[in-house]
Amino acid sequence: MNQKNERKQILLRLSSSLWEELARWAEDDFRSINGQIEYLLTESVRKRRKKDFPSSQED
Image (cartoon, rainbow, N blue to C red):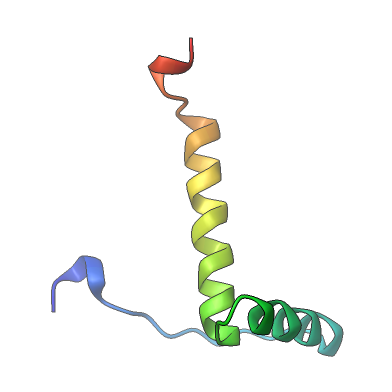
């Protein structure tokens, strides 16, 4: 398996209320809670990169 596709495991502690909100959201999006968390983190990183390194085409 190449390094880019390697998956890492982490322990994540969430409040019950946050867990319940994520569970509802994940169900709405037809994802597992783990998949939803990964999706949200990926989107956040993508948006941050876009903000920190705007495309030169946007000028």
